[in-house]
Length: 114
Image (tube, rainbow, N blue to C red; front, side):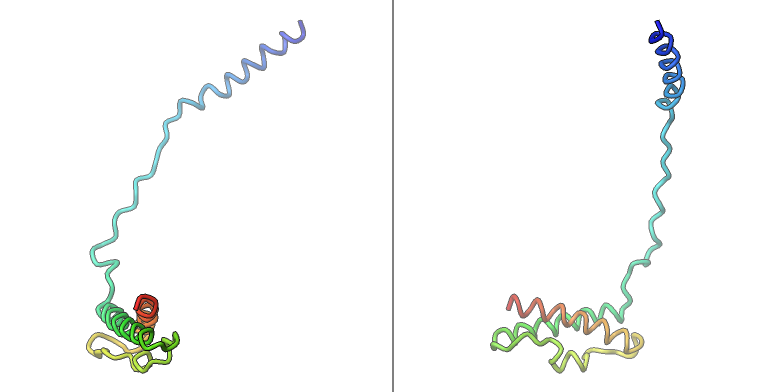
């Protein structure tokens, strides 16, 4: 008898606390708006540095692999001279840094696939 006297209040309490949980509607925030046009575009100075650096690096890497030289991308003249810079596009330092990053990436690809 004691068991049934405790069971009924426990079941009633559990029903009261869980009855409202299943009926809640889920609300989601809308996605963020897309970025404005031109937000993710690369500046012309960096685009030119990437193009020139990768092209020069892949040529030099393939040449060094073909001639049996070791892997030394930072010892080439083009790595230090950073050809293709145009002062009309912007300052030299960002061009130099982007050129050298792209040069090493291109050299690596040219050396290992050349």
